[in-house]
Amino acid sequence: MSADFLKTTIANMVPYGSRVLDLGCGDGEVLAYLQKSHGCSGYGVEIDDDNVAACVKKDVQVIQLNLEQGLQMFEDQSFDVVLQIDTLQHLRNAETMLRETLRVARMGIITFPNFAHWFNRWSVLKGRMPVTPKLPYEWYDTPNIRVATFADFQALALKNHLHIQDAFGLDAEKTVRFWPNALASTAVFQLTGASQRTT
Amino acid sequence: MTFIVSPSTMHFGEPLTLSSGAELAEYQLSFETYGELNADKSNAVLICHALNASHHVAGFYQGQENSEGWWNNMIGSGKPVDTNRFFVIGVNNLGSCFGSTGPMHVNRASGRIYGADFPVVTVEDWVNAQARLLDRLGIAQLAAVMGGSLGGMQALSWSLQYPQRVKHAVVIASAPNLTAENIAFNEVARRAIVTDPDFHGGHFYAHGVIPQRGLRIARMLGHITYLSDDVMNSKFGRNLQESDAYRYSTQEIEFQIESYLRYQGDKFSQYFDANTYLLITRALDYFDPAKPYQGDLVKALANVTAQFLLVSFTTDWRFAPSRSREMVQALVANKRRLSYAEIDAPHGHDAFLLDDPRYLRVVRSYFENIHFTDATA
Image 1: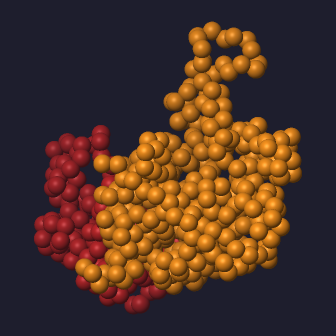
Image 2: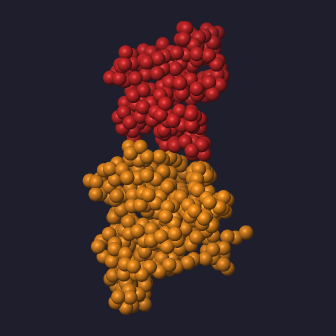
Image 3: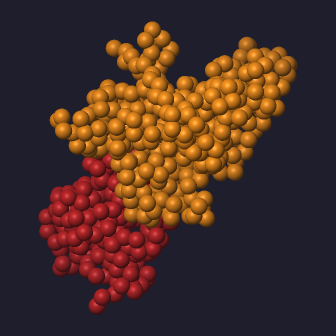
């Protein structure tokens, strides 16, 4: 799956002109795109020095913070959208950060590697932890400390009374809406807080 | 090729009303400029100095090998603040001792040296004086104002006092006010100076002496707080000055750290003015833009329009990252444009003057994205 495909998939879910907080924004690519083509504003949050420098170079506003310290810096409902693009799996406090996401914003868009993807299942059946383009690490050096499946995340959202506005998978350059828990390498969730339920 | 610079002086005849209500009937400011002011006068960057620095920010003075500007690694041709693009101004603050009107100068009204009678000046007063210098230079709006530590406080204050005159504020290793502990360090330094028998109530000039003992101790104390425990240990550890064996003396220099601090203290006491030290540390203590808002920094920063770059250093305990984060939080709450870098450098507060590549890279990238109109381009 290309970075461009992920970027446009995300952008399609972000209302035009949104104020966005991108948690673990990496080199600022997604935010730069949202600013240029989607009229968005806001900040990225990043811990890595090289990524912070890359953001500043792109003129993407970035705040260097360790997400494990929480989001106390940000006020309730002060953003339209919080993005967690492949960030969740690195967070020790993943559940807290999920709740915090919907505290500071009306909408959360969360993507993460789906460990129940058929290839990963096959790999584990063969007796080895999966190593794939999406999960390129060995078990002993992986930064992914919170490994979850599409179905696991649905359960966590329910437990926290979050409303799943949309949920689907991505695989190669395609959106996966049929059996994403097995057929998608990446899970995508669009959440709103319980009080914002629109259905 | 060495970058040769020379200082200028501007005299101001119109009185300056200070925060205290006192008035400076007339004064002069020493300053230096680097690079060319463009036709639109839109590429000016003002550099604000901290406690013991001056308008001599970059370059060298002709024929003086040891005269490197205090931020020469940051400012110059091809440096992070590139003088090929920007017109950079360094200015010495009122009350300082490097050329601008200060306590060692004659008060024309009384015909006597100011000494302790020099009025208390604040960060806001300095910014007002700097604004007048810009008026004279014909600069309506700064592309950026930048400073570290106390200089960062001035940059922040610029964005509050003259929001329409600042496009970017670069605030490094600074704080929105001093903590009690920080004021306490300043007070110890001041007491060291004023209790020196050579201080003579601040009028030591008339006695032909300098309260060097007080200045030395003030500087030694300050120096400890500008470094981190780690950097002191790696630089000096428990290394002895003379040999491997203790000399069992309480008065002699035994450890290398003692020698270092005494050297720094001696050097400082030979060039720095005692009254200036009192004035500048007081300006640090008083700075508190949230005070009129019952300590609410969010409200205090509501009128900011500048875009900010804030930088802090993880081992800086005198101006800790948490203090920079307070400013970040208040700017975020006001939905202002900003970036914030927290550099994991080992050097403590001094890091803002040093060559950490991650730090210089962020500042360079930030300035590369500062755009200005230029009729000549």
